[in-house]
Length: 235
Image 1 (cartoon, rainbow, N blue to C red):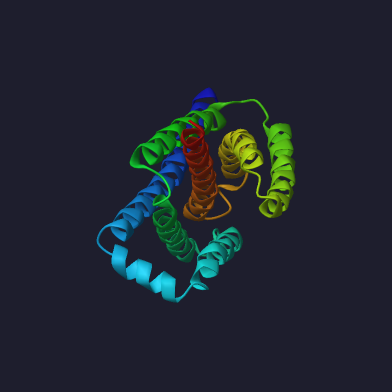
Image 2: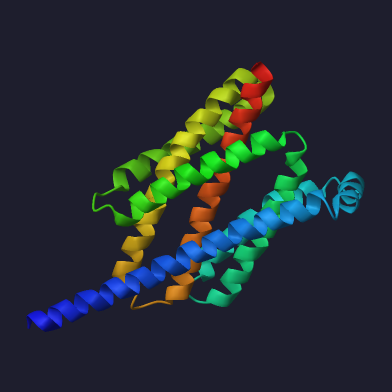
């Protein structure tokens, strides 16, 4: 009986490790695709992209709205159609890579590198913590989600006020929120796998988790980028 239980635990642990490897592998691939897209956009295709968006300014809204639609598609289809969800994840990473390239001209290479290293460090620490901790992060995640909604409302108001000081403070608040959400999403995906991993597609769950963690990382990066950019402008 003890040997049977031990074997069951080993199989469960092996399955969990496989799931986490896939999830973080997909997430890392999405980040690399975004980085490659941004690099190619700023170098090889810089002139073509600049000309296109200068002549088609409405496409900026497409870049902003399409990732939202694709994210919803992954949320609804991940466990039913893992392949299509993976393709949508790669599409999201390409679009965000293009967006990064369009805003990169406002920042220096040092600011971009500092933001990337900072966001990568915070993300890695919180993702590992969320994946291994036995503590419940439900309350922290709920508070962070509520705070994010409030921050979005305040951010929309500040779009009309145009206060740089307020935007600067909001960036720090956003970093705290997405730091908590990173740990919560990592913990949540582990719990979902442990509860339903034998009932749904593991690859689909991995894509869903990768998307959530990728968006956490992207938001951390953007907030750190704004912090470093505004900090240098104040000096």
